[in-house]
Image (cartoon, rainbow, N blue to C red):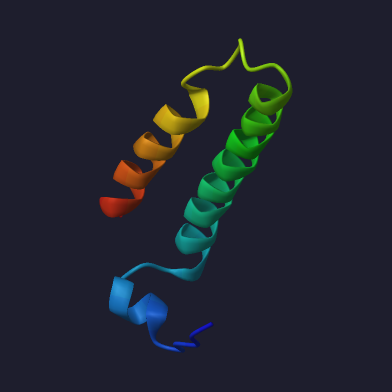
Length: 64
């Protein structure tokens, strides 16, 4: 784990915008985790939910 006290300044974003953005990303990751668990138990449903969700999320993060 790295600690960078200038992270917000380097990314040119304020504390609350950064926090809101990360709460959204974290929520999506949690939901994708639940979808993965459901798919593990019932492999016939949510066939592409997790893989497509991760790809979409990775694209969103790349454009922060």
